[in-house]
Amino acid sequence: MKVTVPGDKSLTQRALILASLAEGESRLSGLLYGGDAASTAAALRCLGAGIGVLPPDGSEVLVEGVGFTGLTASNRPLDLGNSGTGTRLLLGVLAGSGISATLTGDDSLRSRPMKRVTEPLTRMGARFEYAAEAGRLPLTVHGRRPLDALDWTTPIASAQVKSAILLAGLTGGASVHVQEPAQSRDHTERLFQSIGVPVQSGPVAGGWKVSLESPPDRIWPFDFAVPGDVSSAAFVLAFAVLGGAGDGIEVEQVGLNPTRTAFLEVLQRMGADVRVEPDTSAWGVEPVGRVSVGPVSLRGVEIGGAEVPRLIDELPLIAALGARAEGVTSITGAEELRAKESDRIAAMVENLRALGVRVEERPDGLDVEGSNQPLRGRVRTRGDHRIAMAFGVLGAIGSNDIEVDDRAAADVSFPGFWALLDRLAGARPRA
Ligand code: S3P
Image (cartoon, rainbow, N blue to C red; front, side, top):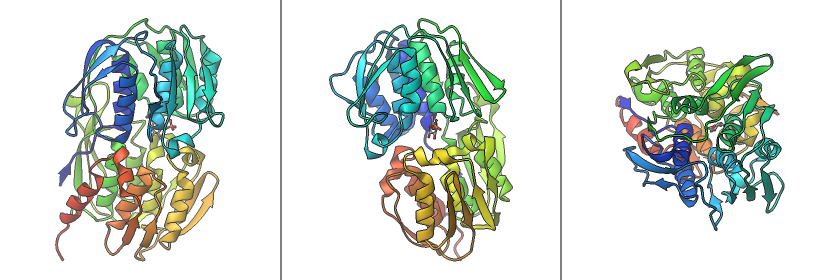
């Protein structure tokens, strides 16, 4: 069966932000129609950008950008909902904007660490005030233009941190250099290059370095088509590998950025025959193509090291697959999972155990022992979309019976997930 998945969450938010900062009208298509995209779009509208209604079918949206100096202070707090990407990237934009804004979010977002971006942005000259706890939302950012140059080494491979600093350099007219321990997703760099912002990057001793030496004083409008989200595709591919979708599935028009596709390599290591067909006619800023996979018996794998940032969002799903693989699936070097929409290590451990799976928790990961026993019980998503979907996949397989306490959590990145799962399951040959 052929399927498509909603637009990429990371690219949707970056495209909306950059189009809002351009001088004139950009045309964007394939945008995610989901909670995180809606939150970021709403915040940008409050700051003065003209963003049309985001349509459920990904059809074209016009964005009237206001330029680096055209953002206007909002008299009410910007509510970023569940979106860590929207929050951290906007903090970068606002730091260099010369205006002040208050940002807040849902319970999950208000508990997430912001110091990783406020610290470098403070060094550049922005100021932050915290309403409740230092380093957490709600906070007020007081931007300054121009900002000071920055050469920053971050201990975490985080595209959100890197992008916040690059965006501050862009809006604040400051030269910036960011070094991370391993390369994180490079969507901001690709979009910058495509619109003429001269960013450079490459390996250095101890990691990966990105530099924006001479930011331009304006950017022009652009056209951009967002591909399907490979992190969303991962859930349907996993479902097919577990035998939930008959002979298998093909996910079309999906992003194949190599900083995002390590999950496909892991599926292969687990024994799946993953076929990737790049569609070079559709390539522009980002590689795009088709991924297909069929059912297979899985074996446990070890995950760790530099591949972790390339599959960070897929780790809950890999842990879930580990419950159905022969042997042990071991994830290490992933302490960042504790700072996501929920503590994803604790969430996976608690929920897998609730279903009778043997799991060992470590500070930086977990070991999951696979088995064939039916998985039955109730799981607590902690409001986290990827926890909900990981257990949605497991629960829709064979004789498993899993009640997911908050199915709506999936909507922030994958509206229509449950309906698609039902449709795929219906494709199973009748016994
Ligand atoms: C994202 C970066 C990752 C990822 C998140 C989206 C982005 O977070 O987990 O879902 O769009 O930049 P970190 O940068 O915190 O690792």
